[in-house]
Structure formats: C-alpha cells, structure tokens
Image 1 (cartoon, rainbow, N blue to C red):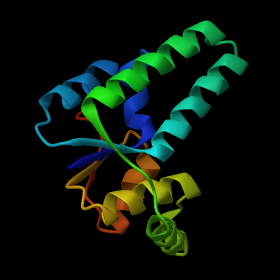
Image 2 (cartoon, one colour; image 1 turned 90 degrees about the vertical axis):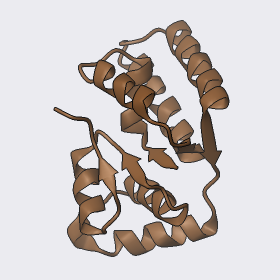
Image 3 (cartoon, rainbow, N blue to C red; image 1 turned 180 degrees about the vertical axis):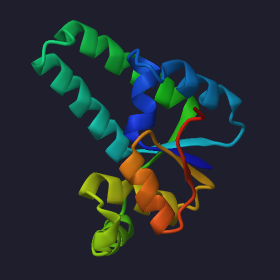
Amino acid sequence: MVYFDTSFIIPRYITEATSSKVEAVLIGLSESLTISQWTRVEFVSMLARRVRMQELTEEQALKIFALFEQEIKDSFNIIIPTATDFELAIHFLHQYQTGLRAGDALHLAISKNYGATMLYTLDNGLLKAASTLNIPARGIPT
C-alpha cells in the first residue's frame, strides 16, 4: 500500500508544474493507492482558499471536488484516522528537530501505522521529517 499526502494529490486535479510527473507516478504504481479522511479535509481547504483568493470560482471548485471524490471512490482506499494515529502524531511532534506541523505529523503517523511501503509527498519539509523518522517517503523525480 502506498499513501499520498494532499500536496501530492492536488496537481492531479489542478494544473501545476508538477502535474504531468504526478500523473506518471500514479499511473506507474501497481500497489493499492491510499489516502486518509484528513487528505479529503485538506483538499477541500485548498479549494476554499483558492476560491477566497479568486483563483477559482465556486462552480469550478465544486466540479474539481466532485471529480476528486469520484476518482477517490473508484481508485483509492480511504483510511479513517484513529486515536492511535493521533497519539503517534503527537509523539512525532515531540521530536522537535523534525519541524513538523500537525497535519504533516498525522500523515506520517497514518503512513507508519498502516504499513505503507511509501508515502508520496511534494512537501520537502515532510520528506525531511520522514527521513528523520525512518519512514519511507518520496517526492517526484526531477
């Protein structure tokens, strides 16, 4: 099972410089694709921010969310974080050298607790923290 944080999923739905590389990674994977309910929350938060900044209209955001939800339903497993995930996230946050923020700590905890073979992220800070915590993580090839 491979786990994706929100930063890796966004370019699949909103065109960015990394979109084609993200798409290539997704197509090339044979393992089960997994996100969490937290990923869904962060995805909607990103859409709301882009609407507030007038980068998207409400109609565009709703269409993107509908596409995201359908593809997630069809192609991804969705993990519901448990108390164990939150406790491990707290443990990770106490390792101050990682520089983790709460949401990233939760992604790492879910990835670790569910035995993901790889966490995919475009967040360099999360990649660094994963390395410090010995959690397998990867960005996109440059």
